[in-house]
Image 1 (tube, rainbow, N blue to C red):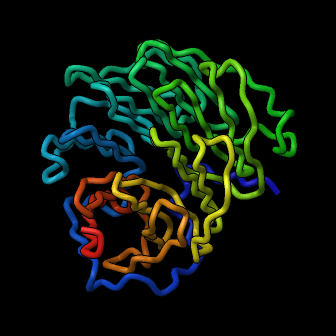
Image 2 (tube, rainbow, N blue to C red):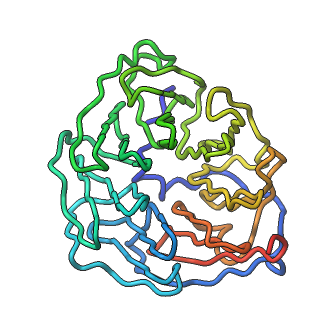
Image 3 (cartoon, rainbow, N blue to C red):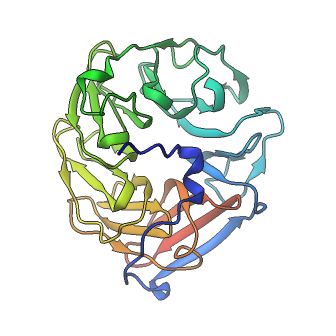
Length: 321
């Protein structure tokens, strides 16, 4: 059966159990910002000391001190929810409801002319200005000028194992060499090396994949429903399953550059090594009852998370510091 879970609805999914893992004694868990019960953050991104976190309508928070302090950006007006974000190469990109795309350069945000009304879930960009945004019902948008202008990519989804549906695409990563990898429903992972003109299907299955990341060394991960974690060591050409130890929905994945990965999800927070070793659960604070989705590495064994109730939290893993 097709999964029809949209990223905006992930906050109400309470599936899965978290096994025993790292104790609260080895983990620091500090709330940096607390929102209201009706607020939520869906994405967080960082470039050096600059950070953003986005979520509910008009909810765009900025930090200029590596996440130590945050402020609401009142200059940004977005009636719909903001699902995806990226700070990269001096440019900020945010995507959301009804095809909304916001762009920031030189500290000023502006809305980019829309080319679709589809809900957009994720966006990424490389140094050459190749940007890709993905969303509902197979939506793929491409920009070659760092997000100033966009065009829609038409792809024949009947050629993939998606039961005849146009799958929701939840994750995208754009490599510096121009390779683009997208992931979504039916465990679909597709790869393009020509700015989205042609695509190769490199993985399919049944569970949805909610996030994908591939770094410059070719190591990457994709995470999704029912505790699914996939790993690649060849820049996304092939993928293998990694034992997660959970059956909950996993929403985000981040590497720290020092051999560790952190995975966020519904009532789940996992840490492991990026060589594919099994992940272990972290159980501090409200992780066992809540959810976090946005995630960035803030260095020296610390991570910043964004999620439920407008929360921004700092996680400190004393074992990896």
